[in-house]
Structures are given as structure tokens and as C-alpha cells.
Image (cartoon, rainbow, N blue to C red; front, side, top):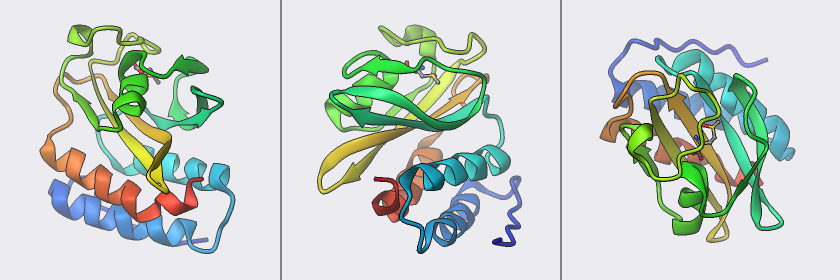
Length: 161
Ligand code: SME
């Protein structure tokens, strides 16, 4: 097993550089997308401070289906275009939401969630899944979190589908 040592309190740029290296090493040589999503959700959950949910939804037959995650039990199916996750798939764009209560159609799986970051996972130019991060802190996710997570997911996207 990989020996992972990451300081969760270091500046965001360094934290995401470390996370990306360990994420790349974790999925190296493993073709099973579900196993890889499970380990990446666990890695993020353990080392990114201030989260109450971290995991994946997969695009299956034109809807989003719950994938590997850490946190409270969650909605299983989300229509493309619905909520923050469905909007990320419909637009193909990252959704960084400072206040989920102000996002039209936000789906509250955990009533504690106040802010959210959703990153599309692209393979062959198609959105095959999303990484969804929730925080109980309003405005938890800044531009560095967005850039860091986009880089991390971009580095391992081929191992997630
Ligand atoms: N809040 C999401 C639903 C998924 S849960 O947060 C885990 C949304 O609005 O799409």
C-alpha cells in the first residue's frame, strides 16, 4: 500500500500539488474506475479540511448515479441539469457555489451543506462523472481549490472511466 503523508494545513497550492501526486500514484496501473473513485474520495476526505461530503456521481444512461463517496448517505439519482451536479454535467463547467441556498434547484442531501464545488470528469471530451465536494462552511471553496481540484481530476480522469 502507498505510504501517504500530506499536511492538510499547508497552503492550498502545495496541498493540491501533494494530493495530485498521491492521487496519480494511487490509480497507477489500476483499471477499475470504481476502485479508483473510492480511493480518490477517501484521499480527498482525509486530507482536505472542512468537508462534510466528498465523492463521485457517474453519468449512466443520461442521468447521474451515486458513486463512491465519503460522508452521509446521499441522493442516488440526479437528472442532468438538476441541482449543482446536474448543472455541471449539462454545462460541462465547474460549479463553485459559495451559498447553496442561493443556487436555484440545489439538492440538499445533507442539510449541513452550505457551499459546494463540482468538477466535471472528462474522458474523450465527454463528461463521464462529476467530483462533488460539500462543506458546512459558507464560501469554503476558493479559486485555488477550484484550480487544484481541476488539475487533480485532469491528471487521473483516464482512470475514472
Ligand atoms: N447538492 C448536490 C447533490 C449531491 S449531494 O450534495 C451529495 C446537487 O445539488 O447537485
